[in-house]
Image 1: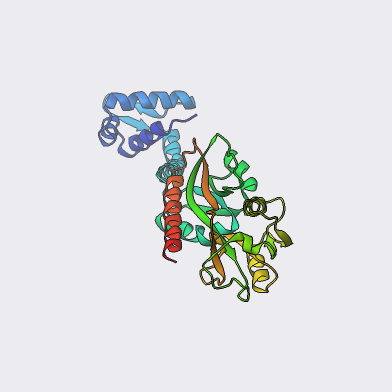
Image 2: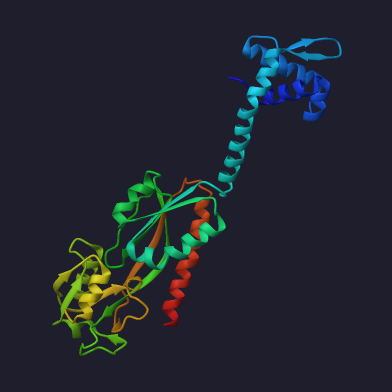
Length: 304
């Protein structure tokens, strides 16, 4: 394989017609230049110079090789610049995944901030529930993923991953505007024991959390409608078809009939998962903006 350092030296030797002058330009001694040319001649199996006491005359092969190597060395220079840019995070790719409500409330600011700071980087976002994205982080397909877990339905994350909590979401009761308790800022769950309930599918953490929450309040909820789309749940509540308990990220700022739960402080924890060995320089940038975005969201809840 041809050594690019030797090829660069060859170009200067051909251009200047002197080992000494080429060495002066490149920062080598004339002897070092001569040695490099010997090694290059050995690599290609043919002489490149007609040597004399004070000069080195380029052969036709040397002229041809110097000319043909110019594009290759320029491409190598370009590659080196790209690699340096990737190492410091100016370029490269960042692959994230998150769940729907975080994609709506948290990720837009994060993506805009990362792209603004690293405009030449390729940033990708996918969507999925926690169980759908964990393997992607483990396998290195994803750099990081936002996931959630309920206090009333705890889970363990793979030990190979870092799991940093970014947000602690309160769970709130959402009532129809015509409900007998509408207008209250705080409600007691036993007062809703005879209501119809709307929640996510039976196999979800949200549904299990609701059953355990109401069990602690002394009743089993009568669940009449299920959907994993929170906008559907909110619309069914608005149409007076039942009540629901939703995490804060799933409740718009202008949602009416939202009340805190008296006697309980149920939470959904938002965490970011990433591999401990991940050396992508864009990952710390994303983690910083994720923390800032979640802090801003939590601040909005405190002010409301």
